[in-house]
Length: 108
Image 1 (cartoon, helix red, strand yellow):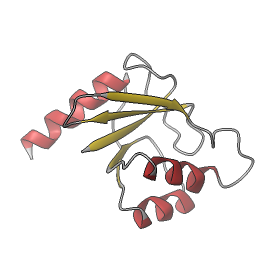
Image 2 (tube, one colour):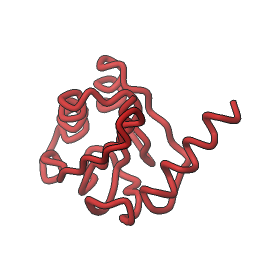
Image 3 (cartoon, one colour):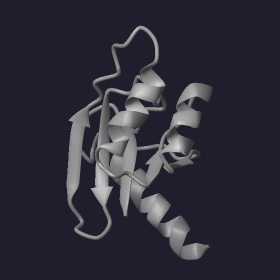
Image 4 (cartoon, one colour):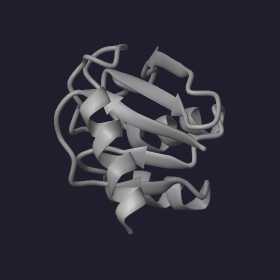
């Protein structure tokens, strides 16, 4: 499974960015291969439509789960159409967020 975290930078030590459409980076963790892929969000500087554009970007990487702070209505619809589950309620570094999410999934 591929999990994307919105981030202020392209490393596991970067802080989670609470914004989705205009986050600076996406950090994607593949739970099967344990590999990390980070890239700058091309939609961050868009004047409008950043959320749906960012959602389309995540589909290119086969993301299944997005961890972020806030998602706007248009982005929420685009993510739902792409079958990307949105998870909110985490904060800290990307590594801390991924660790907390993994722990929560085990305890369910």
